[in-house]
Length: 117
Image 1 (cartoon, rainbow, N blue to C red):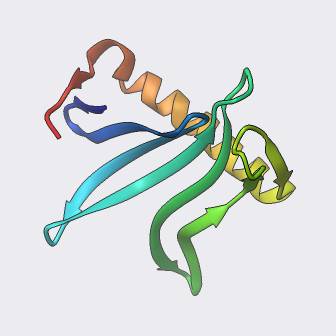
Image 2 (cartoon, rainbow, N blue to C red):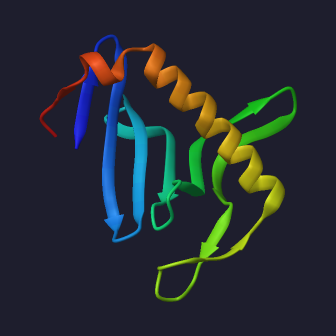
């Protein structure tokens, strides 16, 4: 599902597997769609749990930020989380909490409309 809420970048929510959902903002750069960010969440438990995050890579003050980061791994059948990377998972969960607050403050729940893909 692709949602629009001007003036913000489109928000795309996709079911990847039975227990995985991707939530991402996308923008165009040089004709390519770039995610910023794209978070994959495990939905098999009551609370959704981030398992990976992807953001554009940037260099800031000599540090490389962004890229792709796996913060939890699933069992072979995809029905449970097999292991966490505690620090990375905690940082990503904290990011998701802040992002969710921002989405709410930006009026996505009240004003977003389904957009054409």
